[in-house]
Image (cartoon, rainbow, N blue to C red; front, side):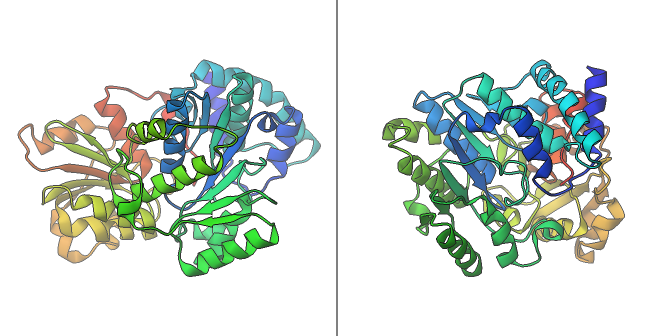
Length: 417
């Protein structure tokens, strides 16, 4: 297993060389397994993970065998590749990657730079796993953007674009219109596409692309209180539920469903790390939040908690850190910064620099490697809620600790995003 993990680590350290040439070559060598089942393809700056989880839950409640591919993971690498809620065992991931290794080596030998990246390999593993297990349909989340994302080698039954806001601007563009164009890259000729509550410039660009491809466009724009109910917290989750339900309705001729089963599915969505409330002393709320859209959702949900809060936070990039800190600092009694070993993780000094001096007195530097000591500092009889937010790495790290799980080496196998 250590040799296998070393191979994955090396793939991860290649980073993200954006493009589709490698994934096209890889899946072609594997016999194009992604063409073996219907796919719902989901892109968006925020909300795509929620919509995917909702779709999977509804179809499972209706008796279908559902493949789900999402990223990144919180604790176990196999969380990315699930069938009816069961994560893929590491032994099976290794088995598929052993088959991919010689293909990848051959690709590199024929042309330098053609060795697949970590995310491309995991995408291919997911496609192959779903074919082997004969799933009824696959819910497929893009990793980054859409147009050049590794998942964009499918011809879906329907495409969904959940939201558009500024994120990954170095790769996707510096304006909402540019980012919308990248997300709209998942739109295929004649295939219906659903959009959520988008800024006017974004929907205008997406509508133009859909029209050129003769793709029927369904734009949702209803009030949150008119949207379906779900067990996930926040009005934005009800809007996500509306997107998922609309997709299910459009696909009803292909995958018939019962309304009551869909409602049941929406009330039992499993989405760890997204406003996940863990009761105890203290009450812990885990909420990965790393961009503008995520901050708006975080602020809405923070209103439901007692104030002041204790906040643990980590971030990648000072721009993301600034957005999160502007949201949580005024509501917090204590803010504890954590810095992971990831290359782009913000240091304590960088976090201080993007935080108003008004709040510096409540800030301290946490020990990433000793969460037990950090929880002891809070105290057993603490009456303040603890919110763990920012980087998904921190959320997963805390969740693994609270579940008394080491997470193993694969917990570090994340995408460079």
